[in-house]
Image 1 (cartoon, rainbow, N blue to C red):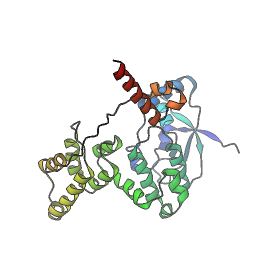
Image 2: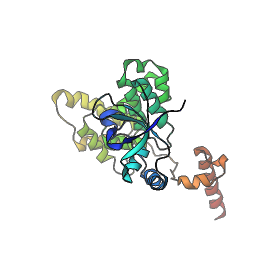
Image 3: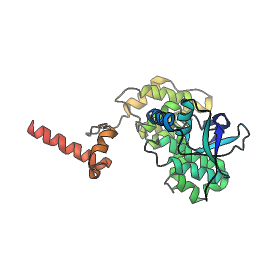
Image 4: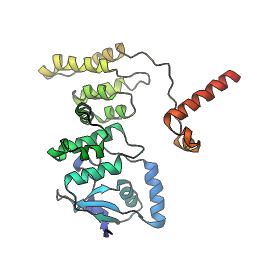
Length: 276
């Protein structure tokens, strides 16, 4: 069945997911610029998918095609080609999750907000595996709860989780603290060699709940620093290298997995040191 494609004004389309649709899902600016250049030449080739906006704020809610919409707006287009689908919240969520979960650059906290969407949209999302599987490959209830907790972190703390300077479990502990306390922790962790261990996060949360929360007080930076610095984990002997994706794509297919190219780099360094 061929779906009808309509030209819809960009001003009539809002991001998927309500108020935090814009704020919590990032786009690679390089991809936006690359697509904008293409749109200048040939226009938007793949239609966006929208549905009627139940909130009444605008006419349509975007389900798939955020990068295309942004690029089209950047080059000055007033309308974009769209397919309008009749979707209830479950179906819209499934399609949105399916269109985003295979992105190479999707972050931990973006996945977390996708799980939270499922939890907030409808009660049956909690028991419908079709919805959950389309968003995140997790079936354990405890793990899903952890991801939802990450959405209560401050922006700075979410960024630390995304770069894996703060673990998911430690992030969950910190999510129960007020945003001002979270931001103090972010400031402390701005030092390159400083990390937040799970033990430190648990101690900070326990101390806050016992000593500060009942009296409406907040934790100071010095007390937080003392806990974080005295509970630093042992340093790993492994170094972390960043390799440009373009270089990895130049390798033979058998070396393009993360484990394979890490072993390749390790062997090259060993050979170099032995022959230096």
